Length: 263
Ligand SMILES: [Zn+2]
Ligand SMILES: [Zn+2]
Ligand SMILES: [Zn+2]
Image (cartoon, rainbow, N blue to C red; front, side):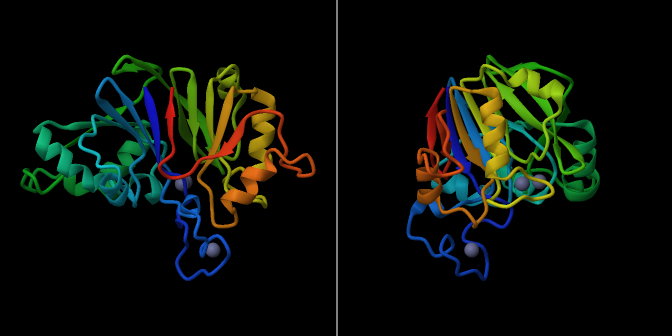
């Protein structure tokens, strides 16, 4: 099983529109961040977690030639706005792609964002994505991988992260309920949202994410959903600098677009 970070940025993306800060003008390719999404590849099949506004460029860059399943964390545009572009894959496969999520999230997609995909008056064919909305109900097997939806708080909204195998992906999170936390001890890989240096009402900042890592002690941790406050090279150094408040005795990294992990 391999995991590819298709995107590691927050909703604005990095560089952000109309910004000339050091990160937005950095020449380090790790400071270019598209909307947060990962691709899990197993046995020649591809499971996508989230399909945001930047999915088109992510798919082109990685020469993605199939998507077999999509897992959604929530319905913010940086996580669902690319679903329309799945039509390339559904017309090629000639079968629908299952899109898994919370029942209320899927109902919102059907009613407000992607109503045209489900309108019987709209003609089918290559023009629209043929997706199947599948409401999650606990753990399930996908391509031989045990997937467990994990409720987390994104501000006051309850959304999902996912555990797959002995890894977990929690991209938009500001609080982890105790029942979810109990399922995250002993992980091989924890992928956790860490937006910026200062606090934010709906996302962990880097210090809060590091506190979760210290509590859970996963073998490796990667931070994602990062905004333009964060210069990759600097913060990556800080994780091993004894003089930095970010110094950690555990293996912690900032993820970057295109990073691949063998799991
Ligand atoms: Zn900037
Ligand atoms: Zn969000
Ligand atoms: Zn987001």
